[in-house]
Every structure is written in structure tokens, then in C-alpha cells.
Amino acid sequence: MKQFLELVPIFLFFIAYKVYDIYVATAVMMGATIIQVGYSWLRYRKVAAMQWITLGLVVVMGGATLYLQDEQFIKWKLSVIEWLFGIAFFGSQIFGEKTFVERMMSASLTLPKPVWKRLNLLWGGFFTSVGFVNLYVMFNFSTDDWVTFKTFGVPGLMVLFIVLQMVYLYKYVPETEE
Image 1 (cartoon, rainbow, N blue to C red):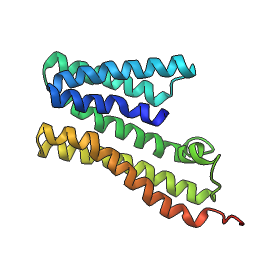
Image 2 (image 1 turned 135 degrees about the vertical axis):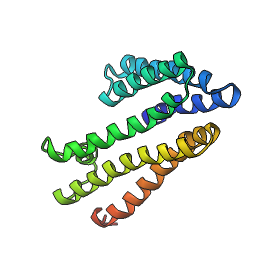
Image 3 (image 1 turned 90 degrees about the vertical axis):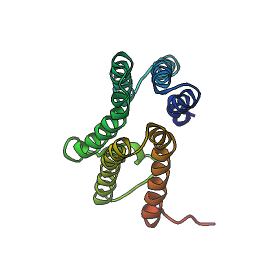
Image 4 (image 1 turned 60 degrees about the vertical axis):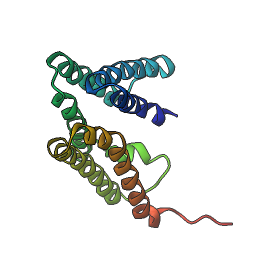
């Protein structure tokens, strides 16, 4: 359920864009993200650091988009967020006892330390790459194409990456006895 809630502002952005324009969509996304973070605080009494960062970027980049009437700011937000995720994953290789991937998945999966590190590097590379792909789409395609890429392409790439990760990790899953 929590993962679904993360996607709500993106889908509301898409719908508002299709019905109105990029500026209304930006305002809708800003409002939805504020509500999402508020809900997370009220429901769980906790907001993840990346949610705060995302909220900050949505408000700053969205605000610049609306104030300056320049859609480039909201388009850049996706790359900046993806790169921050990438930096966080790469940084966890150096700082801390466990990588980000290990912190997120170690409760449900046991892997050798080198595999955790490799997997963490793959995640960092994935996020960094998506940030650059966003730039390519943003500068080489229409705003309509970019909105579709942001709404469906990025989540699609994430699903593909997770499926490939599962294939990679399959050999480390212990066999169960029947």
C-alpha cells in the first residue's frame, strides 16, 4: 500500500496534464506530494528522508516552474531526484557497515557481502542512468512524450530492473523442502 501511495502524485500529475497543461499538472503534483508527506506523518509518525527531499524538490522546482512559467524546472526534478538516489546508493558503499540495498532487503534475504555490494552498485547505476535517460527524453522529445515517459516509462524501467534483479538473485534463494 505504501508503494502505491508513492505513485499517486505521479498519476495525478499525468491526469492533470492530459486534462489541462503542464502548469496545472505541476500544481497538482505539488499539492499531492504535500498531502502524501502529511499523510505519512499522521499515519506512521515518520517520514523517510528521501520523501522529505522529494517534497523539497517538488516544491522548489515546481514553484520555479509555476513562477517563471518554464516547464524545464519540473522536467529537471526527475533527473535530480534519480541522481540523489544514485549518490545515496554509491555513498553507502563507502559509509556505514551496510549498503542501502542490504539495509532494505537483509530481513528477507541472506547474501554474501560481495553480492550485496554488487547489487548496491547496480541500484546506484540504475538511478543514475535513469537521470540521464530523462535528460535525453526531455531535450529530444515533446513535453507530451516526456510526461508519458515520466508516468509510465520510469516505473516500467523500474519493474524491468527489479525482474532482472530477481533473476540475478535466484541462485541465492535457498530451496525449500516439500
